[in-house]
Amino acid sequence: MSWLTRVRERLPFINKRETPDNLWVKCPRCKEMIFAKEYEANLSVCPKCDHHGRIGADERLAQLLDEGFELLPAPEVTEDPLKFKDSKRYTDRLKAARAANPHHDAFTSGFGTIEGKPAVVGVQDFTFMGGSMGMAVGDAFITAAQKALDNKCGFVCVTAAGGARMQEGILSLMQMPRATVMTRRLREAGLPYIVVLADPTTGGVTASYAMLGDIHIAEPGALIGFAGQRVIQETIREQLPEGFQRAEYLHKHGMVDLVVSRQDLKGTLAELLDYLTPAKAA
Ligand SMILES: [Zn+2]
Image 1 (cartoon, rainbow, N blue to C red):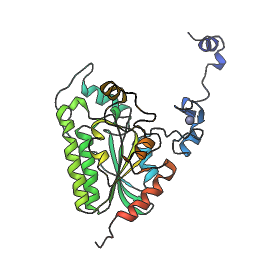
Image 2: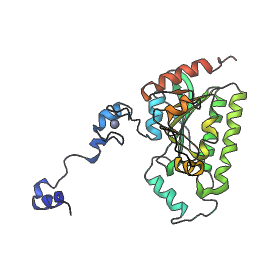
Image 3: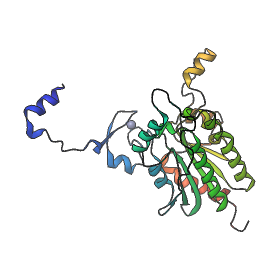
Image 4: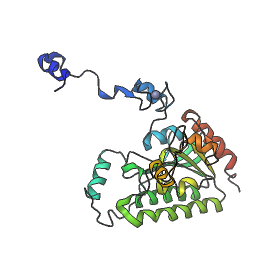
């Protein structure tokens, strides 16, 4: 029992919590306590050290799309096709993830405008089973890309994932070519496909649609890679350079086109969509 609990028991009048837990946010990098409202107003970026916090799909869509956007419905897919069970049933993991998340799976899309430019924005949410790519994510990606094709507008995809959803085995890996086909269709239609790499983007997602954009934007400090650093280090038996697999390192080495701070992201996307989207008449 902590001293605080003991004090609370002896002095019942201070037992009641007067400040809710979510009033303050602790920055994971500099450990500074930030007033939650201030943190939110700063787009979940630490005002002290510029750490870009991980954000959910709703927050991201609201940050990027203009007010009044349409949320695309979640696709229906076969649940738990392999009847997979490790230490827990896959169906139980899904149930727990859905209870903790406002959405049905890890990929949510909206259709609307970005500073007046029509666009579909798809967001992968790391808080939902590590943003892992299974059939639901694959189908949601395809639905979003199709919406862009139907409306002759750009498709912006914000990625964050630990990789493929292992509970769906080969069916999760099949989402890589399926998503790739859609990026080809966008290209054939002359419509821009812009990827925003958020922290962390790894595994099978990096090996497919996260690296097939016309333009790749990364958020500052984002971890982006295929295999983890330890695996690489043990395989090549060499010390990895400072900042390896981080957005700034990848930008310096030509893997990403731009590193854009969250405050400037919406404006940058609007500008790029303006340059790259063909006129309606085309
Ligand atoms: Zn900080």
